Length: 210
Length: 210
DNA sequence: GTCTATAGTATGATAGAC
DNA sequence: GTCTATCATACTATAGAC
Image (tube, rainbow over all chains, first blue to last red; front, side):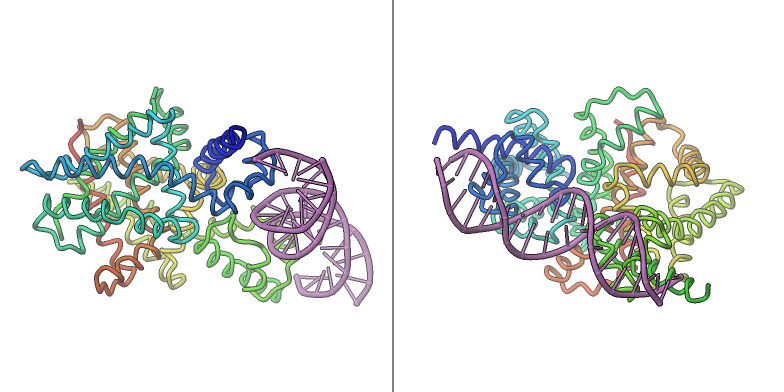
């Protein structure tokens, strides 16, 4: 059991690293087991299949992030003056909580979500909504309180645009940072990305309706 | 030669359809040749390799889009009162020009760009900048005229956020439309997506700096 | 639980007849 | 230019010894 736990953990760590760097489909079990220094067959023994491994990797982050987000949202709801910026700020804490679990945890989580959205059409999204749909809907309700003049449809699209912005920037973050370093002498720790994103996203969500 | 052109064209059409639907890596040459109803070996005969085919597919769209965009930008520059919205509007015409070439052409092109950004790290981006870097830089200059108070660095990141928003929405468009149809009874032709995107993106780019 | 060995399938690419 | 046939390689998954 002690050795098994170790193998399990080694696989999960290697998998989340590779998945977040290259996506789920582009990462093979061979790469994962090689990086983890475990046997190829052990993945199927512990997780049943590659799909099972993917779910295990993502779920580990969701179980930290989602309850933390839920707490923040409840705390905000108790206050008056709910603004788009404040709701967005609710996401910062839970993300940095991931950072405490593992260095670069927030980045890994967002990249996993980003790849999950485009690959394996909706598989990961449905899984998330089934497990944590209530938290997602809570956030949506608060956004509509902060932007009461918007049609529900408008808000729906704006929020998905915002999600898209964040996820794309994370997934392409490496390329973007390379360009930035080439064009300016930009000494950008990845942490600043979120601070840059927030004003853009907040303004986009609250932009005047047509 | 006449038959050859036909085969070439059949391959290109099948490839651009599948690439835009599933990405480059997830699409196999066998799928392409099967859809095109041509022999498997003909791809390597006409395009040398899968990579060559990818470049050919993308280049065909770039050669229509980029000069058209360049014209629009020059026309705008001659005017006074250059705003973020007006620059963004410059992209609409060239995109719908692709629509004339082939139904759904604009969507295909944007999806190709979207997949190109995340996959094959930077390969496609470098190719674009080498061929059409001047057009891209022209657009950037105009944006900085429209937003003179921004640091170049801020503008750089904002524009890439905007690009990210558009590309992500296109790539995940199918999933998003499915959700929209489920949550509302949303009879959304894909064309309206751009109209929804524009206010969000414009507001994001011009959001007050920190 | 861990390993080796291998089944079964899919990929990109090419040689050679026509 | 087009075809068949095939090579070399990669993948996920599993059976069975230890």
